[in-house]
Amino acid sequence: MIKYLRIDHVALHVKNLTYSKSFYEKHFGFQTYFEHTTPNEIPIAYLKLGDTILELTGIEDSPVKGFHFCLEVDNFDEAVEKLVKDGVKIIQKPHKATSRHYNEEKWQRVVFEGPDAEQIELRG
Image (tube, rainbow, N blue to C red; front, top):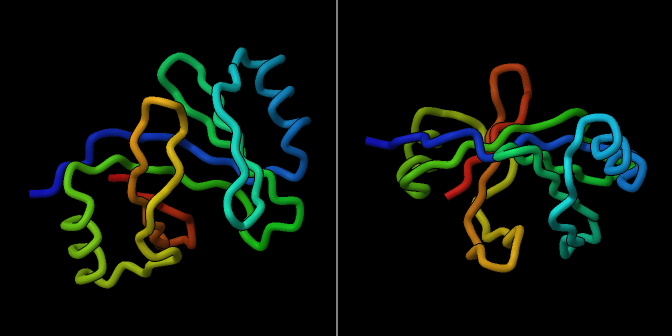
């Protein structure tokens, strides 16, 4: 049986990463704890408020608007297999992701599409 453990993070696609980081830090008390640029040259910042992680993805002309949420799962491969078998559409195939801080291992991720075209990321 697959066990979904928690919401790992919520991600917002923003036009101006510097401005958005400042906005969430100044007005809501978030703190930026990690930034990197993906192999596709997409800048990403991770902010924390307590145990909550907010991922800001700086894509000025992103074809994807809005946000996604990420669920941590105990058995990544089994969860992906079941969702595919159940006919849930994959938006991004499973792949390794960059760690968000120095003591974190690389992890796997996949993105599925929800019933209203929302993005649901699984992390394992």
